[in-house]
Image (tube, rainbow, N blue to C red):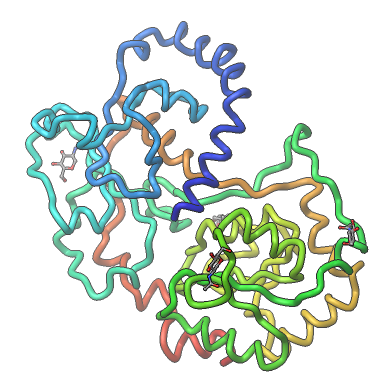
Length: 367
Ligand SMILES: *[C@@H]1O[C@H](CO)[C@@H](O)[C@H](O)[C@H]1NC(C)=O
Ligand SMILES: *[C@@H]1O[C@H](CO)[C@@H](O)[C@H](O)[C@H]1NC(C)=O
Ligand SMILES: *[C@@H]1O[C@H](CO)[C@@H](O)[C@H](O)[C@H]1NC(C)=O
Ligand SMILES: *[C@@H]1O[C@H](CO)[C@@H](O)[C@H](O)[C@H]1NC(C)=O
């Protein structure tokens, strides 16, 4: 988690310079156009601020402006910066499902917009009775790319590469310098998914080095580890712990910013979400053995290996965690937005509909 956060903040900090200019040129212009925004700051109370959500983001509206939102007259507060007695007066309360279950406030203000931000899969909460959560929230953010999601909120995005962030292409020597085959970082030693079985199978044909809490020592996780992996390894296993529709975590976007080919396993629509030839999907192979054969052939063919880095000349991966907050801020400022969440949690949050697990997952992975 610390890694994801650092990664997001890294981007925010980099864009600070740009923001300042954009702010002066665009935002201040907007303020002139819509003078009411100057004083009309919406307060978003984060019910139990989850660690992934901008721990460092203070309660001032300036912090929101740094996100470069189209409309940024909002501030994030939580119980540390905002007395709970004033909760009634907040424009919006942002919940995660776990926090909501643990402890929920009374709804005393009918104008207050209750927002649910779902980042985890139905398997994370299974089995759970979700009926009681229908008709509680006015807005739902999810990672599901579906029309019933009020605000589509993916964790990352592939964008056209800005000229200012040119990619420096790698050469054959760079690939030849990679001496090892496959790396995997696992922080969670036990995994409900079938991914460990897949790795066991794969490692019969190709060495797989496992780093993390129950594997090899990679001093600090995150940046240092990925730098080492980029230098030494041909492939990185960007395996999701749960095989659920549209579910892909930051780890995939993070991997794409290094020059190592991600091998993916998960229920996301990778072909839609990522550039062609930017990853290798295990589902495209009849078995782990067939995948191993293909990876081996790429290791012997640096030119072909480099094909998988070509896309970086025109595109790049970015973490996209800030966009949802911008979207929320914009909606809160729109008096015509008709809050009617189409998202029915009990129907939608069904692991059997959303996820493959157990023998169905094994079948999908040709295990
Ligand atoms: C938000 O949802 C609650 C519960 O369904 C409802 O009572 C309230 O009127 C809704 N607020 C708005 C602004 O639609
Ligand atoms: C490959 O490795 C050699 C020896 O460590 C190093 O001098 C060279 O810069 C490396 N080349 C690339 C492209 O990384
Ligand atoms: C991991 O690396 C750190 C730093 O090099 C070292 O202090 C620690 O003893 C190592 N742990 C293991 C289990 O090797
Ligand atoms: C979301 O769905 C739309 C429509 O099916 C598709 O065009 C788009 O590529 C999808 N986005 C992602 C990230 O999968």
